[in-house]
Image (cartoon, rainbow, N blue to C red; front, side):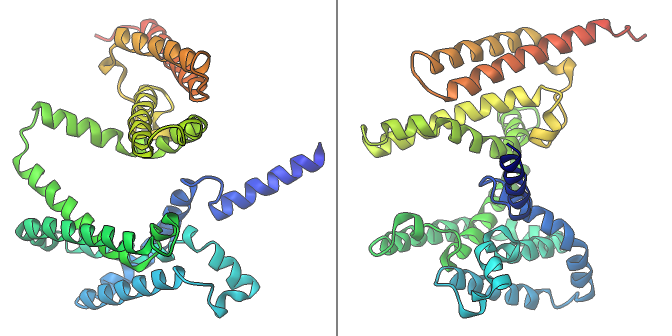
Length: 324
């Protein structure tokens, strides 16, 4: 009906403006905000050269204060209409992430000094990340005595800020270690390169995989030991996500779905992709009917899409005149 259509369009508009349509959309929504303010923040940081350590300290204190505020009841200041809207959509703004934006920009502006610092102290940074991570888990377990696990694990609390920063520094330190010691062309180098290439696509797709697997997870979550359900869910989600991303990376819609240009046609193995697509179709049909897994529908559709892209791409390539 017309009323239903109007309501759907209003909902779509609201979801696009608030980042609430899907729990990944907030990420894009926040990123767009960073793009908007980036030139102005960059100008400010260049103008304030020599005071970056103080700016970073103030930004960090604000980050902790914001997280502390968000972990409590709604402050009186946010009880009015406009400020109330801001309060209820605060996680979809860049405000709770401002420190990470500022820290990243300052690190980039002082890249050589930053990299030297991380390389010099990477063992200590890894040790600090382990210590802070252990303390974070211990504090989380303490909070679960009087909070629901979902509330205790919220990222909008003060204590995850310390864990996030030590984790980022430690991972970067390990990355510099890998960059210094990797052997170009080795098996490990090829695996890491492919993993890096697929990482953003995996991030984007895994939410869809979880959504499709959710009915099956709900069906078995109380019938089996919870840690086993979690372990199997993780393995299956990774397998489904990687399968979908591998298909997308070899399709014409690779750029808009994974953020990277399509794998060149001459680097694709036609026989392997036909076999892979066919296997996904069969697996999807088995999952859908005998196993009654809704995720099976997605799997055979992805398999059929892979077959169509492979056959279509091969046909187009065969029609192109040979170049001398």
